[in-house]
Amino acid sequence: MNNYQFKGDEKFANTRSRQNERRFLELAESLLADMSGRSGEIVKKRYGLLGGKKETLESIGDGYGITRERVRQIIAEATKRVAQKMDHPDFLEAEEKIIFTIEANNGIIRESEMAEKFSAASDKETNAVRFLAGVSGKIFEFEEKGILEKVWVVSLDSAKRAKKIIAETEKILKEEKKLLPDEEILERLSERGFLHPESELISYLEAAALIKKNKFGKWGLIHWKEVSPKGTREKVYLVLKENKKPLHFTEIAKLIDKYELGKRKAHPQTVHNELIKDDRFVLIGRGIYALKEWGYFEGTIREVLENILKKSPKPLTKEEIMDRVLKMRRVKKTTVMINLNNSKIFQKQRDLYSVKGRK
Image (cartoon, rainbow, N blue to C red; front, side, top):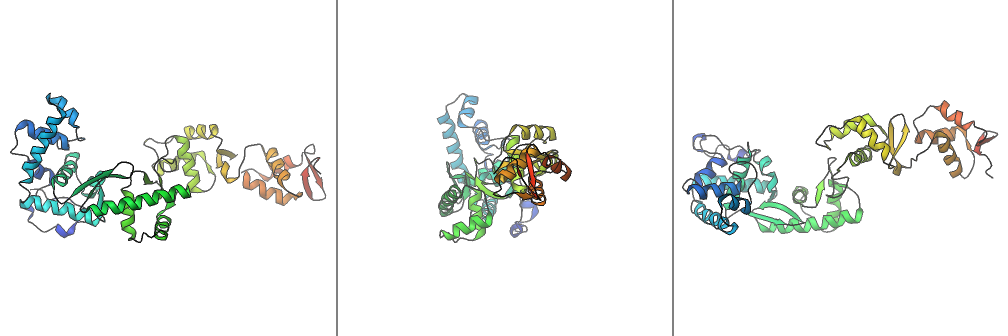
């Protein structure tokens, strides 16, 4: 029969002969084999062993014309019967493999990570892992709305520690009001007395319901736009913010795809249209945009020159003006000089320029 498929689990690779090993789905089906047709089907539908998502008690009941409570009873009876087989060598081995993988992940794994951790080849195989973990008396399912996603632990102490660390990290993010990379999160937690190993802290945070790492590897609250950008404008903003420099709209579109910020390919013209509509973005050259929060502002070169000179406490030299303008706009120096030589708006005294009429 097929060997179990695990990632990074060489410890068990040769514990039994290949002929005696079975995959999780085969084992789950074997444990349910002696159940009557309907009961077996109900359990398989509830745990997703027929493929796809797990069905709710209501949907299963509707399909068989029975109540939700009756479905729950059938599943409870089936679980008791499976529990009587838990001393079978194949089940014990599968259970040990699941426990080993959870412990290797610092004692906590999100249920949604099961497929990745166990290299499951299909939804049914993934759901079989969940089924076996669910009937085990040594593996616990834990979930707390708004704090922890559904996780598997081998000790409830792990879930309690995770809750405390997640709650403290939420406070940190709300206080700082900005994204933080791993090292800064760990530094803040350490300052507050959480001296757990780095990998343990990260494993706990990965199980958080309202904290998430964005595509650039920085932690934030899940509702923040920099963490979960929805529309094109938010994706554009995130790309500019992370790159910390003005970019052409075609380059922005490429980076949206590179960082996998959307399910669909980003089209340059769509990106350009959104840049034009949003006053957070400032056109500083041909197709090149910057963030207004960086100090850029809308306007023609003449308006930029006026703004620079009005804000300056003293008249400026041509070189000083050129340096400041080129930080704000991607234009030719001749274009700047043509506008600066407009005697109706600007005046030159010796080698210094100011706005005309300004004392």
